[in-house]
Structure formats: structure tokens, C-alpha cells
Image (tube, rainbow, N blue to C red; front, side, top):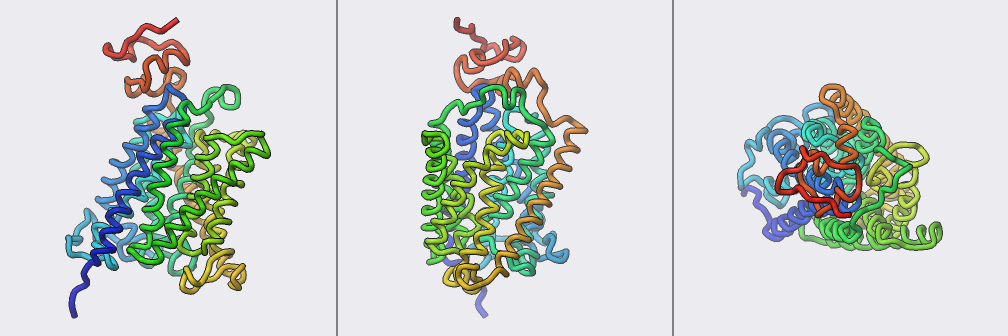
Length: 434
């Protein structure tokens, strides 16, 4: 019997999709960077970019093997057969694509999930603590959930039977629940609910959202792992849900506030894209339109919950990614179509409540696990080395005090407390303008 070989068309598409998903993390850096104040822009960018390096090292060393290796513990975690990517040469095939490419594609998902969490603790987390948090969190939170949902023998995939095409559980819900845990560990920013903390650069936010949307086609359509009809359907569903998410958010803003905003347009598109991530390979086009619209409208309200419940989710990771991920994952149980899934059907297509129940169990377990473990990791780091920046660093801005740089000339010196000359390199010392 001839050995399996990779399909060139599928391989070409997944190569492109992998590059698209990797681009999402720099896109997220711009999206987040534009949403913070001028004094912490570079720190926000760095938290995303350093996640690329940290998660890559962890993934290649042991993360891929534990996520996608043969099950070693009753559906909970994979084995160590591929530690250090051992046994995976250029001729190794996963389905119709090279295994090394499949591993790289999945790596890009792990990277952006870690970077997403940073938005919940913007403006106040120690950069050194973040460097410790990311690899530990990736191993203890992301890797197990990825195995549950996508790995061979994973209990959510093969035992529970819940559906998640492109990452509603391991990416969106995990990042949102983890972000909530971490912002509770660190506490609110100085001036939370008192000072204006408006985004400093909305064009940057819009550019970041555009790059995220562009990359999301690789994220969702690439998850078909082939250049085929399912990829095309996921691609169209992704576009449709992003559009209705944008419109839903703007409709709520217009009715509630009297004006649609650019920040609302960017956030609404992202909310729709978040929600369609788990369901893009399970719902029809009509279902995708409804999923996006629902997420855009609901998430536009959810981002304000932090002010009522007193948790400082700086850049709305909870309100958009957790809430949007829950919406998209649960609505599979309503709108799943046999023509897309090849079997499972949602409530509106005659499938009853069974699939919805499976989706609900998966959502609750993953959210609770991610929150609990992240909270534990965050508390341990906080107790041992401190996770929150000092009051002086936070007041002055993390760009100068941590990275000894500024994003804009006079951007920090014109907006905040006086800066000690000891934290400004000679080449960057300037005279504040009157």
C-alpha cells in the first residue's frame, strides 16, 4: 500500500492560511495599541509580539505533542511522542497536508489566544511577569483545552460530541475567561471609572480590526484543512457574520447613544467574527448572518458590564471574546445544518435540544477551567514576583518606565505626571512644551 502523500492544493491553501493567522497577532497589537492611552502604546504592542516568540518555543518543545499527540489520559491530554517535534519529518502527513504545516497552523492559534489575554490587563501589568505568565499559561490552559476540542481522543470532540470548527472554545472562551481571571488578580487601573481612558488612536484601531478581519479568513476557512467546498462555506460565513456583527453594534449605539462610532464599528465586526469562529463550519449562511448580528448587539451591551460589576477588563476581552465565543458556540445547537456538519443538526433543523445541551456543557467546563487555572497562575506570580506594575510606573506610563521609549514625541510628557530624568534615555530627553 502506497504511503500517504500531501495534496498540493490543500497544502498551498494551508500555507497561505497559516500566514494569514500569524498576521492576526500584529493586527491585534495595532487594535489594542490604538485603544490604550499614549503612555502605554508600545507596552501593549510588545505584549502581543513577545507572545509570538514565547508560545512558539513552548509549542515546538512540548505543546504540539500534548495537544495533538495520541491521547494519553482519558481524553484530557496528549502524549509526548512528538516532544521537540520528534518523528515529524517533511514526509509526515496529517490528512492531506504535511504534519509540520498542520503543527505550524495550530501554533498560530495558540499565539493569538495568549496575546488576546493581554487586553484585559492593559496599562498595569509588569512586563517581566507577562514573560513568565505566557509560557506557563500556554502549557496549563491552552494546550489541554486544545486537546479536548481537537486532539485525537479529546473528550469534548469524541466523547461529548460538542462542535467547534475553528476555536470558539480553546481561543475565544479560553481567552475571555482567562482575561477575566487575570484582571481580578491585578485589580482595576488607577482612575478606573473616574478618569477618561479613551482610545488614543482610532485610525490605528480600525487598521488593526481590518488586519484581524483579513487574517480571520485563514483562521476559519483554513480550519477546513483543505482547498474545498467547506473552506469556501466557512470563508463566506466569516465575511457575512463580520458584516452583521458590525451592523448590529452600530444599531445599538445609534438607539442607545444617538451616534454610531468607529470604535463601535471595529468592535462589532470583531464580535461577529468571534461568534462565527466556532460555528462557521456548522451553520448555513442564514445561520451565520444571525450569529453575527446577535453577537454584535449583545456584545455592545456586555462591554459595559465591567462598570456595574467593578472588574476592569481594560480592552473588553470579556465583553467581546468571552461573550461572543459563548454566543457562537451555543448557537451551533440552534442553527447547525446537516449539509454543513454531515450529521448533527440544531434545534431549528429538527435536531431537538441534544446538540444545544452538548454545546452548553462544553462552554461551562472550558470557561470554568480556564478561569480557575489562570487565576491560580496569576496569583502565584503575583505572590512570588508581583504581577502589577508600581503606582509610579502606571502613573508615568509603561512605555518610558519599562521600555525606555515613547511612541510619539511628547506623547507621554504632555499627558500625565512629571517623568524622572532617570527613566528617559539621553537620546530621548526633551523639553516639555508650554
